[in-house]
Length: 342
Image (cartoon, rainbow, N blue to C red; front, side, top):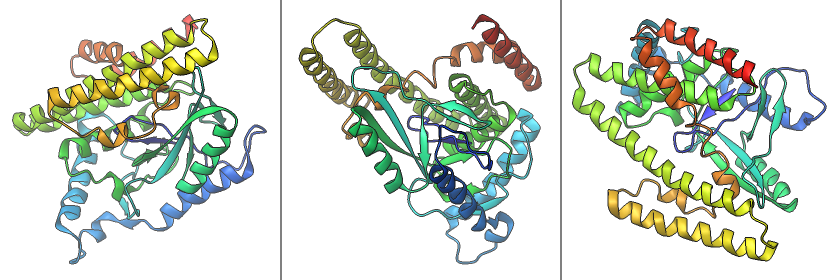
């Protein structure tokens, strides 16, 4: 299952299989299965929720929009229409799950966890924040840098009919359309043990979907606003990527541990100064919450994961001349090329 938070696109893999691998705990899978089933038990048909006279108008508009986006995704993007997002679940808070990420104190190589059928990923997810924090604290005691990050949406990759969550009801229409298409794209193509390709593919499809959504309705101005936000996200990620490169160079050096610790702290301090300059330049503070964390290797270990293959995938889309089925076949062929080269 894949869970996506727009801020950093973190992935959360869980499974509903009763087959437990030796390297994972029964308690972990119990909370994963229980959490998902709890959500399913609270789902309500969207067509019925919309009829509720006490429903907030903004929520009603988003639920109506969701039904339109699903039909659009099927007809325009050749994405699955398997019953997902036909039901609504009200979730307390901003996030539905919490992802734990860990990396060594002097490395950006994230720890991996493996799951039956879904493969391995650099994240471990929990439905309860306290459980996620407890697990993260244990990793910290092992000497790891850790991060706990909330995610607002997920896909079961077609195993179930995914409900629309209240955490997904972004006020911005472009982001709302994007997250639904992104999750449906995961149902269209998912490559085991290849997070870079999975997330890059889903994001390329989502961006193309938003483009067609707005321009097909003659709403070029709103599409340009969406693109402006995308460009700002890209620039912010470039800032983080620059910091990551500085850390990578440091960790490859032969410095003593005390010297390396001091320089590591200096690099993160520089990131905070660079971010203040970034805010002044673009007059935007949307990343303040993320930057206010006690940043460490775990926060930066996945910076390149979701963007590295996007240029290649965008090229495949461009040469497909708008034919999404052709694009999907070309991506599958690209996957075979990657496998042959590995």
